[in-house]
Image 1: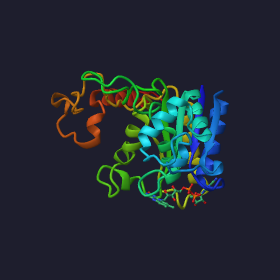
Image 2 (image 1 turned 30 degrees about the vertical axis):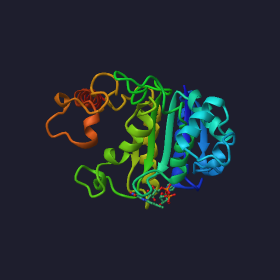
Image 3 (image 1 turned 60 degrees about the vertical axis):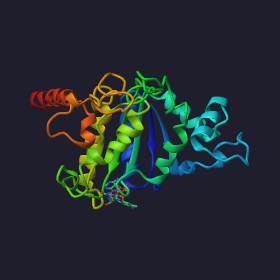
Image 4 (image 1 turned 135 degrees about the horizontal axis):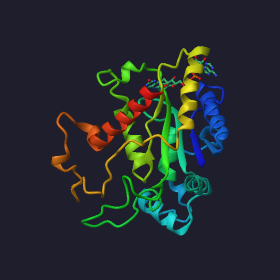
Length: 277
Ligand code: FAD
């Protein structure tokens, strides 16, 4: 398969740099074709501005979404953006790798999303009607492909547990997993998270690297997070609220958008495999 790894760390000799090398080596060993977008090395421009739309009139009021849609349709987006879109269409699997900075991705990676996810490419796709609210959340340009995050944190795993002070990691990563990856159609795999890494020793590194290699070996078979598709009947259109009869007792917030029954079935299969191993 074709794998694109988008890497967002300023230092190649960092822990993240070492983990990227581990992931790429394992993917190649598995026979995958790998491309890496190293955003700092590429000098990626993070901000959307007028320079992104060279064909737009320079004195016109800049409306980013409209300008993005026009430039995408006309083929006049900048070459750096077009190159990343081409890689996304090439890749069967997308991996975003980054250290958690202030509870989210580094600004350079957010800027990659802002600019590469053009209107007509990643959003504003498909029929908008009373029955179908656009091709998104499970449908869209990147449907049928898989995506996952590789994330490192300074905080401990307990800090990201359900009662941990930082909030549950699944909640912190929901805007990326659901809002950025599931939105344009990806099946989103559970994230790979390495916690408490700031004072890592060789032994700690080896354990993380082994876990990462295992995730790279199982990219094609790991069940995705069972997010609920938007147009499959679970949501009322146009309010886009989950049907009240689907809300399980004690489920609130982001977890509402995961199909609880499917998640339990997935976890049971996982536990069975774990016990049999
Ligand atoms: P590095 O600093 O490169 O390395 C970490 C450790 O791993 C070092 O001890 C290093 O010696 C060791 N190491 C590196 N490579 C190897 C190797 N090959 N073999 C063995 N050991 C190795 N954390 C949170 O939890 N939540 C936040 O919201 C958060 N916000 C942050 C905001 C900013 C702006 C910054 C700078 C940090 C923040 N952090 C936060 C901490 C951050 O997530 C971690 O510092 C980061 O994940 C560490 O990854 P790194 O690649 O930069 O590690």
